[in-house]
Length: 275
Image 1 (cartoon, one colour):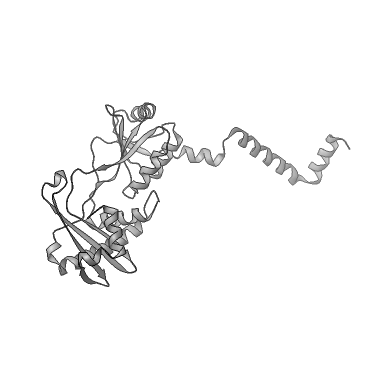
Image 2 (tube, rainbow, N blue to C red):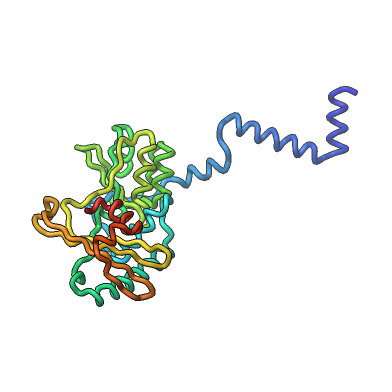
């Protein structure tokens, strides 16, 4: 049987065979070209709509929300934290701190301190990427699609909920204003892996000060309150640590000698490098 007769017979006897052959041919051509329909759609939607940020305007964050965000960011490598979990944890922390401060008014005026601006990253980028961002933004105030041609950079911006960018031409730094849900630590690590990004750092507050750190283990809150004073813009000369546990609404103060032998407290001290 000749190939022409065979082909005619297969087409007539099994019409589904022709459909399979056509589909396979299309898939082969897409594979050879290195492009898939799904990838094209994803890349087209990857660039976020952003505005030029003239000055930092971070959202106001409550103490409880700050601590909740800090705790969840330590526990997860996700680029965006779960908003429902963050709100629930913030409400629990707010109630816990109220009970602790009522029971121990000597620490009532000490509050949690943000180490850096929430949702902000500073990126040092190579000249080509910087020009691409600056040229797209120009001096416009209306939103623009930040599609730089660096697919990995554009996609990560979208995943982190990038809202605004401020380019500083004299330093080649991009100030990136991300979603309030952004896990800044995970975002920093992700940006550092992208071609064209030389470094990524949080926008840290200068100096030092009093602060609170906490973690919940087995239904028990372990809380370290750090009182700091004396030339804090230069790092604080004097510091004192207070240790507490809160379980089912009951607050207990823990002596430092016993606290340093407790694993949960030791972890918190190690995380913050407090002594």
